[in-house]
Amino acid sequence: METEGVFDPETLDAAREAYESVGPAAQTVVREVATAMEFDREEYHDRVTSDVVETAREALFASLLVVHVADRDEFDAWRSAADVEVTTFGSPDVDRVVWHVAPFADAAVAATFQAERDAAIATLRRQAFGHLYSDRL
Image (cartoon, rainbow, N blue to C red; front, side, top):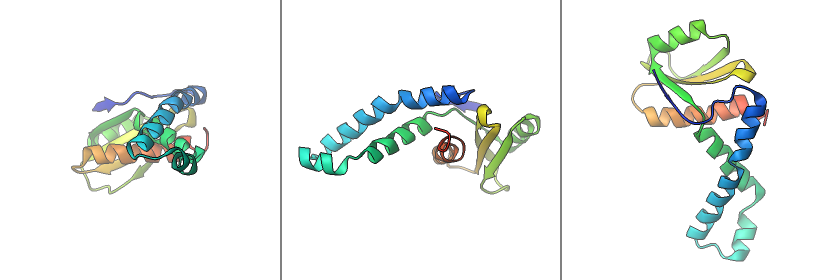
């Protein structure tokens, strides 16, 4: 099993703290992207809304969540021992699984994949945010 990522919050307070910590980075990324796109001051104020910065914050937070990547047998062994509800997306007929656990929610999300590891990880992280964090943060 492989594990990668930065944020692995055990509690909702820890999740909130991690989420808040990426706020300044989200603002900087949005500002730098707008600069690279040559937005003038007026266009920046018209197009860069609080929703845009919040979307960047959500994406940054999600992209840093700890995920586990393993073959189906390792995932099944983890799942049988896990004391959380697991929602799995994808086909049961593929060999690999990526998952994220949110202990404070007593839940995890998982996604199956065959070959596109990085795409599966990115998709799973966004699903983890939507299913486990969005309403709580």
